[in-house]
Image 1 (cartoon, rainbow, N blue to C red):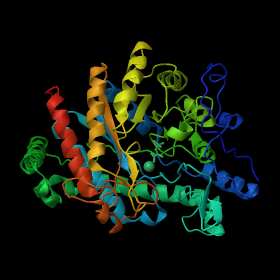
Image 2: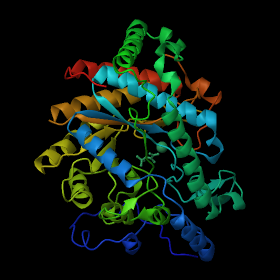
Image 3: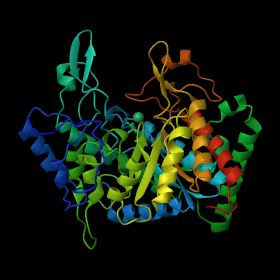
Image 4: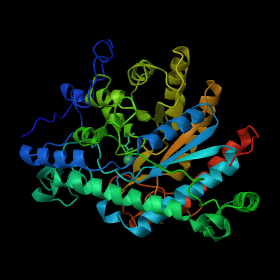
Length: 472
Ligand code: PEP
Ligand code: CO
């Protein structure tokens, strides 16, 4: 059995930062406790898979990463807005043309809606092309008296409930990398080729809009997007689909540290080490221990990074994380993705914003309104309510403004298909509808209609506060 520790989730002691800022190397995290790592039965097999991974060409480039960092710095200054979204857990099965196209389409459509409302450029970041490893609340899953390792994402093991399916398999790391490459290749091709759907908002699937009391406002917003696009195209003689105009970036939770380490490379003429498996990796809420392996790994890479903060995080802990992860106060380096839930955000977020201000810390604040609002229905189905998601966004928007900061981004779990996993919204899904098309492997996602409606409502919120500057 190879050493891959299952760490303590509660060990977030802060007593001092001493020892957290010593020499760094791509493998220095191995001296720390790494939470949420699988146990592989065959060390030689794992070593061979990692060796192969470390020789494969990278998925992204350092100049794309540097460009994203500059854009995130602008978002932190209020000049752009970050839209990050995709599956909770990507599946290998869904690595197919229609699914990828639908996900890209909804993110691009949402971004146009947000540009229209917020009058700010939008940074589009997919939670895809590598979102294959999941943290779990328990190492084991028990069904009818049988306990097997929990499903940890397609890159680690399989959903089926057999010993063979659940055994972590190093070959899946390679399969995951290959699927991430296929996905990113197709996305680049779609974007380079021009994404025709975008040009005609009148062809968007907007049937659900009619069911909303805000129908006429929604239609006005969408029409205004169509007019602006046509105006811009006439003015510039180019189309919005041109690659030079639409950037698209990838992100995933940097959970499986041996995998991330195998993608950590040096590039000619630049200092330091880059994770070249994604532009924008993040540390999950369950692995953000200040003295843990994930924080150690992330502090040394050059990419812009994010940390999810939720649950019982304290203001001091957040400031300490910033000190370790962004000692140089580099613009664009650090994004805090807060996910406290609509019921808690008013109690928990203000003291954190305050502590950050007092510590002279400036970050990009991004709200994930999904993970603090997960519920289980009476029949045991995991879901999230549209109204609660929106409520957390609205509250966060206000809290940050009142604290002298601003909401600079949003992080959604969503899909481009019309699944039935979250309830509410103009499409009127109820608990009873959840059985109809519930497909997610881990957490419930907004469907196409809910995601577009969420963007319309967020745009409305942003329009009320917009600085009045034109955006492209
Ligand atoms: C996730 O983003 O799917 C996730 C597990 O979130 P968090 O780390 O915020 O719990
Ligand atoms: Co999730």
